[in-house]
Image (cartoon, rainbow over all chains, first blue to last red; front, side, top):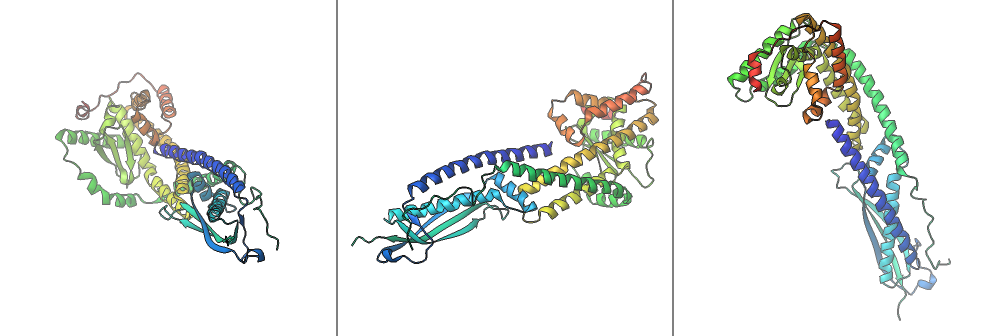
Length: 153
Length: 283
């Protein structure tokens, strides 16, 4: 009986994680695509130096940071993956979402500064361990770059 | 360098897969469970062969450490002590109808507990709860339960269970190590637990067979021996029965088996009433 209850709880958590995790992911992707379209005019590049026409521009540091939590289903799926090896697809979409969201936030900040070009974009990823050291609790992705702002003079 | 005027639209599903994660998950889960089941079967089988070879005195040495704490419980009433004495007397009498190794010793204990249950553990210790006495109105029924538990001890089931449990825990730790999440670890132990449960069914059958032969030897018939199971089955809905279910699965099948054997033996036999010291405790 004990074993049965534990299995039921496990399946329930798994189901909840799957259902809400999928729903959150779908909604997030929808919102990401929408905002990417809106912010398409704020160009993000990895170029390290500004090109000639932007030489007189002001510049400022812009950053966007996102923290995303893993759901129970992903944790278990990744745990199983760690036995077999291979692509951890469950985490790939998580990081993909976080990276794109971080860029969007950085773009928002640049837009607020009146910039239409961000150069030297870099990413940082760190794990926020809150799970007693077991598995991944949540991740932070930070995108930062230099926003070039056409001077008003 | 020509500067783009707009961010390009990123093609989807390059960095993340669009595949539904469920199929991948199901495949991995099935793989792990198959591996676990195979492993547990192999381990359990070899323990079943090896554990009975361990001398009984080893078991006794393990339980000697704990027997002190068993005895120093609450202050028992005189009524309870008398009932326990009656249980010990009955157990000792029934044990004479069982063919067990010379170095084996049985110890009978009565437990103040409303859940009907009886179990055998290391060192020949057999526990019967006071709740079980409500389900055994005759001596024959109680003797059946006691003989069943003695059967477990005779076949060294407790030490096999211990060995399997230890090895299984070890395996779970070895496979998942420190990297595996707790969720996966609990999953693994669940899969193993269920496999172990099916092994327990064979043990129950073995103990049942031993009990049936002991009762035949002692009373010459099997009348009343099915009482405990029948009455447990009649109360299927109650939680007590559910608790019973986990340690003694397949009650119905076993009951049928016992009843079949009853039919083959003469049934016009009289049962012996329960010892007054025991029946006094129920009311």
